[in-house]
Image 1 (tube, rainbow, N blue to C red):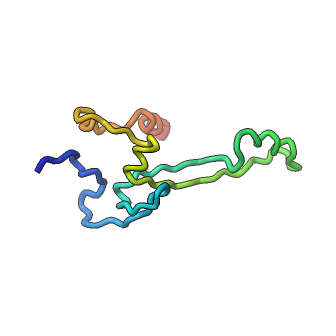
Image 2 (cartoon, helix red, strand yellow):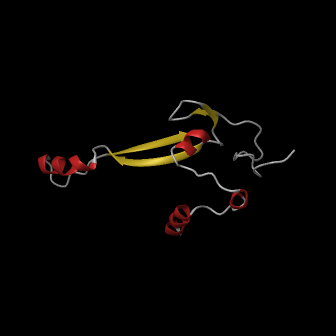
Image 3 (tube, rainbow, N blue to C red):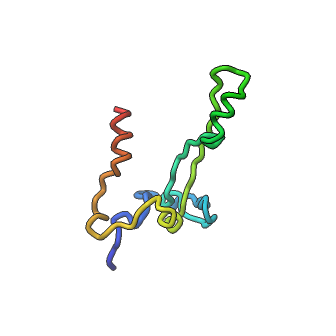
Length: 109
């Protein structure tokens, strides 16, 4: 049978079974290794209100707390929300990470 992807769209390799998780968008069950996972760091207050909060703050130099979110999308939600793109047959074979990930790896080294 023809195979569309070398990994069958998963990151499982030698494991027989992986845990299932719920999609953050539609609550669909999805294997943990197949889900598109994103780590988002956001301010608790939207950008428009940050200046008002700092002006009204009694403590000088108070840093507003941030929200740290680990979000997992099923493949259909990741494509719909443009987290990942559909790639052609030729570009599907390219296994190098995207430019953003390459920049992050260079900062670590």
